[in-house]
Structures are given as structure tokens and as C-alpha cells.
Amino acid sequence: MQKVIDIHVHVGSSAALYVGGSIDVVTTRMKLHGITHSVVSPIPGFEDPNGIESVRRMNEQVAGIQRDNQEVFPMVLGVAEARHGARAAVAETAHALGELGMGGLMFHHDFAGVEIHAPVMENILDEVMRYPGARVVQMHTAQHSMLEPPFGLWVMAQKYPDITFLCGHPMMSMIQLDNMAAILKHCPNIFVDTCCTYTHDRAIETMADKLGSVDQIMFGSDNPYWHPGLCMDKVLVDQADLSPEDKQKIFSGNFERVFGKVGV
Image 1 (cartoon, rainbow, N blue to C red):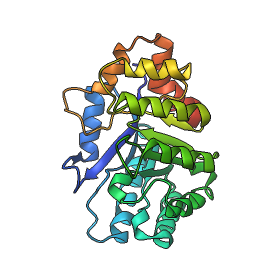
Image 2: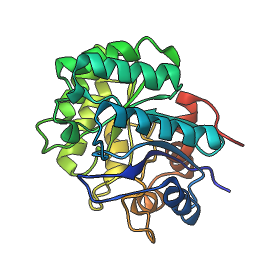
Image 3: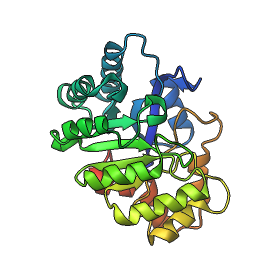
Image 4: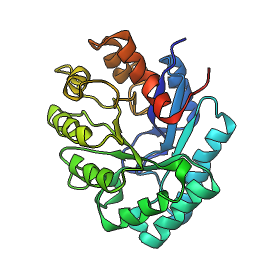
């Protein structure tokens, strides 16, 4: 069976997105579409009526998913809410990466209400740097956003070259793709995923052409956002005008090159 590692998967119920699902929903879709492994994080905009305590429980829930099945979930990412202020967010980071042993953090700044490159984010990433085995940060970007534009990710990747950044939905439009391709050439510590990719104009092939290789592209689907009967981002990679070797790099090889061998 082909190994497919999905680096963009969320669990929980979102108060903002009206979507979400349990880990059972996630694994059902994985099996249906031939996805063998996933990197799981809390769903953006998850319900947090108790603030800091809600974040703590969510991180514990996601960490538990990996403990129960590490073969399928080789990495999980926690959250630290910048809107809680620097002191609380740093404590949330320490709890997630230190006490729970999570592999890194996930941010979706349009839901946090704070810019990617805001000062409080530097407080958080300074804390991330204290955990050499968890220097992984997933950041969503959107060309139209004032809070999570590609430029903001470029600023942080330049300031923190020892952190590996995973960029979520970087190809939602060809303009965003152009911006991200230019940034990637200057930031070898950024890797983009394939989720929510623009379905026209050969977006994945165009990104590979602009970069000169697929080495900074990893597969991501945004499970469980998509319709259960169709994983469009996997279809786009499968049907891309790329060599079998390049497709294998996107589906699993690049992740394993960066983070180590997964499963069998």
C-alpha cells in the first residue's frame, strides 16, 4: 500500500467554521481515501468557554490521540492562544511541548485575532525554541488576510531559522501561490502543504516549476473539512503532471526526510 502522510488534519468542534469531527471521523476518511498517517491538531476556532483551561484540555485530548495510536499519528500539534496574552500563551506552549510532549504548535491567526508577526508570537516562538525536538510550527496563510498574509510567515521564518514551518493552504489562489513560491526560495525552513489548492491552472505543478523541485511540498488535506466522498487535494496530486518519484516525495518522502521514517 502506498504511504500517504497528511500533515494537515484537525479534530474537535469549531464555533467559527461550523465544521469539525472526532478522531473517528478523521480515521474513517483516512481509510476511505488511502491516507495511511496523519499529523493532527485542534480545529481552528474550537469552542473554548473556559479560556485557558479549555486550551489545556484540548491539547491533552490531541496528545492522547497520539499516545493511543502512534503508528498512525506520528506527530501531533498543540495550540497556544496568543489572544490570552504572552504569559498565558508561553505557559500553554510549555504545557503542550514540555509536559505533553507534543511535536509542535498550530496557529490559524484569522481565528486568533492576532497577526502572525505580532510581538506576542515572538514570545511564543522563543518558548518553542526551548524544545529542540518540537521546533515545528504550522501556520495557515491567506492572501486576502490582514492577520495571516504570506508576508507575515516570511517575517517569522527569517527570525526563527531553526524552526520548521508548515504552511497551511498556501495555494488557494495563483496570487498566493506566486507569493509563497518567492518566499520559499529564501526560506528553506518553510514547507507548504496541498490543502485547499486552487483546482485550475495546474497549481501544484506550477509551484514545483517555480521552486525547481517538489522538495518543499508535503501532502495536506484539511481532513475533515472536505466532503467525505472526495479528497480533492489527493486527487490533484494523483493527477498532477509530475513523475511518480515526485508524487511519492509529496505524499510521504519529504515528511520522512525532514522528520524521520514513519511506520513500515
